[in-house]
Amino acid sequence: MFNTFEKPLIMGILNITPDSFSDGGLYHNCDSALKQVKKMIAEGADIIDIGGESTRPKSISVSSGEQIARVIPVIKAIRKNLSEQVLISIDTTLSTVAKAALDAGANIINDISAGNNDPKILKVAAQANCPIILMHIQGTPQTMQDNPYYDEVVSEVLQSLANSVNNALAAGVKKENIAIDPGIGFGKRKQDNIDLLAYLEQFVATGIPVLLGSSRKRFMGSICKVSEPNALITATAATTALGVIAGVQMFRVHDVKENRHAADVAWAIKKSQLKLR
Image 1 (cartoon, helix red, strand yellow):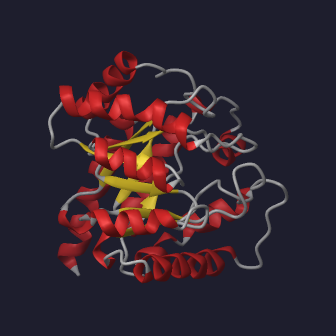
Image 2 (cartoon, helix red, strand yellow; image 1 turned 90 degrees about the horizontal axis):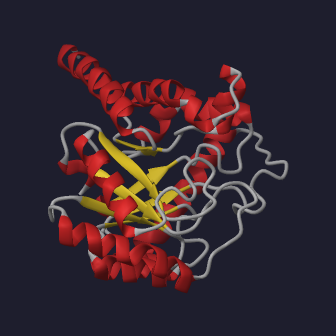
């Protein structure tokens, strides 16, 4: 599925949560959520990523029942009011939430634990024959920034993701339905995040589509000397352009318009590079 699109995909973030690090509490009902979805689509989003649980550092896990209560009405509202062609991904680590979301009209599973929190989610993806994004995280959202450490972050994350891909294949997920995400900001130090961005080509070289989720991440604030997440729109767009040149196919972002523009300009340059090779 991920290989059927010619240009890089922009995934717009829609957190149906009270406590997400950047936009918690903004889209707490169907009306406000639907308004934001329409805005993101108008600005060039290809996928809407809906989550009912914050995964910021030290966040508290949310039950499957509460996640379902938060996200299913929004998914149904999108399907009722907007085109069936709008792609929806469900951001969850729980198989029950993933299945409920797919049944309500979602198309993609986006699992930050890569199936490690609830291995049954891989079976859900296999049975539904739907795409799944497998992300790398060291620890859990509650513990991931408690002194994370790597000897060599790029090779270790690559190996971990290779193991996750093998687990998904063993569960029956088709290879063409798998994408990987290096997990910027999830159990990573500042330099780890920079190193991963510097060597995105190694993730692309696996032949598996790559998603980059660096939107408004705190490590960029320390570089830019700003503390507010919404002050990092330009910084995020810079990582999007870098990712496109490296061959990354999908970008999960809060600010669709700016990142769509960055991706489109970088893609025009990338196509010229490919033509000359």
